[in-house]
Length: 439
Image 1 (cartoon, one colour):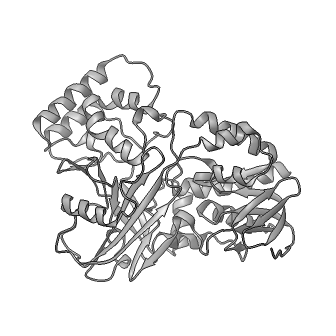
Image 2 (cartoon, rainbow, N blue to C red; image 1 turned 45 degrees about the horizontal axis):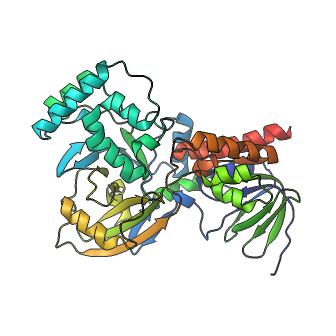
Image 3 (cartoon, rainbow, N blue to C red; image 1 turned 90 degrees about the horizontal axis):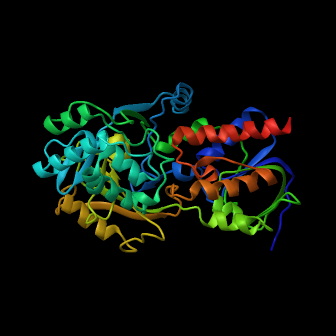
């Protein structure tokens, strides 16, 4: 192995995703001595953008809907104000019916028997004196009623999280699931939809260059080292070893790597910590990106949720509706998410043909459509799964990493349900915590 020794970094940052870049941005502003190490040959991680022919696709659906004024300004400045502000349009597909989102507030137009059962069960749940829910399934039954939970939520939960709702905690819910009032449920069942209840009522997206254009604001100087995959971390000797043969010393470490991967890189890890890290659950996703030779007759939706088990995917979005610059004139584009894990494998290893078939079944694609480009990408770390044992296992891992002095940031470094603004702030906060310890 050819080893190239480099100078000692005061701070080494692992990963050049959104959180790692945010940490580097803060360190650069502070004129710190640091380097970022990224295993890929591009920056951005899950916030990256790629070209497929003349089409632009992000690494999954990414938009900015932050309510934090400082982040809104930061991202707007990152693209010199060249962004599009959308009023979000979101639909649900259930047994051939198109339902506005969130479905619990817009039952109008569904079969009468379904509406009746949803209303009766919702009122019964709303007026019951049930105890505090111990898992997500109990939360749904308490807040949404039995019929709606079983027909909608439990099915989508399995498709998106790859576990049954009873296997999930309630830690992640926050503003993400809307618990409606009786008035809202009844009105939405009797009248066509007029109100908006979704937490994501409006969002911003860069006009050009896809979501990754927002990364321009995260100025890290010339301190990013691509093609540097860490293969071991020696905490005692403060030494990083990379797959390319390079090594470098460090004084302090900030990691945005997924916690199970970080633990694997360390030696002499206590058995209970290794065990806890292995039990941290996440889903993977097969992303299918399609460019279509048609620019009309698309659903009035930026993204759509799918509840039926017969449909392989759980969610799709339309990049060309986020910005016209994402696809050539006269065309449209679709990106499809099919989630999987050890608990729920992919139905097929190659999902493009199955995805096209299911899109035709839902009416989103037409049999005569010409598909100009198609691509399947597997993302190992998609969503952190908030299973019942997550908090216990995460505490064990975090206590150990705190003890050996590794700061963490990002969705997978924190093992949290981070949105864009959360990831950026987590990178900044990791730097602030480190400097507070160094004082």
